[in-house]
Image (tube, rainbow, N blue to C red; front, side):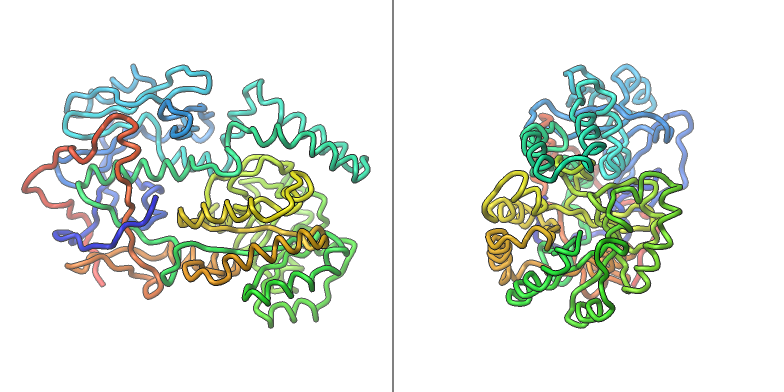
Length: 522
């Protein structure tokens, strides 16, 4: 979604929408809505509306937590279809659910399976209401948490997963040169992953664009939200390093010099029990100079999160290092991760969930180029190809791939979070590529060049803030007031047009005021 021009919306004195249930897809963007204490017994659906008697968004009640989602796609064009990994209501069941709602309904968009089977449909009523055969919050949660991987693994054609597991079980027994040779041979197959696509997967953000198109059609006017970045920034550029060995520790100064010269500061993640010991003086020097320090597992063997028992054994050592270094951030070695265990680490933020990365031991990704929450932990997804993958495995000789991804993220208002290793940037050609990449964006006035801990703190302030109508415009109230700004999603109804529906022509109910649910005051 691109950002529209903020304009006043006359007539609003309360929340824009009323719903029968909290909707995280709205909450994360700060769009004003209220939840009514209302239960439509026996309907099996949830509702959202903007005006009494006006069009509604309808979706099925959330399934049980243990329900295995289906792998579906909204739309038939492979270039524009939206991934829907969720419990999907088939058409015959949808007709029964919609019999409890007024209007004449007809299917307008197909949700199909990977093999092309019709799983369900998006329906539209003659009054402009829309029924989704899935819970949008379930779709979002299954993408962010990578639960979709369980669905894809159930497909016998997902042989890549098993081949990669076999490789990493014998990896320690192989010479380094053999490891690299095998990974280079395997990389072209990994890069062709059907989902998430690499180097860019837009599916989750396309879902948000689709939902906001629906909201705009229901409201009949642009929908406000809290912009992603503070103080007028249009995107974020975040630099991080993982120090994997004593070689990397010795090579730090070259990277520090490059970053200082271009006006950047970064985060350095150290391993507490490795073949090196980072001194208190080194930590203090980094922090004093405006850099950040984080924790990178305990031994760098990829086993910290393999089970609850292992985590409980290792966590005291990682927490001791966090206290000693005043570290609030964590990244798992080789980005090994577990959605349920990650919040137990006790860190302010984690940065182990790439947006899309088929080359890591745990291939996949959260599909987001914005931060998000996993319980009480902020997740900062790495969104740029790691240096070892780019230069050693894929054998790129320059920074072009980094630049292209960063330019894309800038165009979409995302976060370009780069993971590099001083262990590998010892090659002068690689270090020069890193220097040129930084120089390209050093003077970008729209980039928020932030430390990870700053991004996490901002994301918490933003989440604790809300939009309020002043009588002439929307303003942000709460911890982010004064640094946050209001934006409007400029949807152009592109996703509704994919479904063959011109949303701008959706009927509006004349003479009915927006739902007066709970007044928001300064």
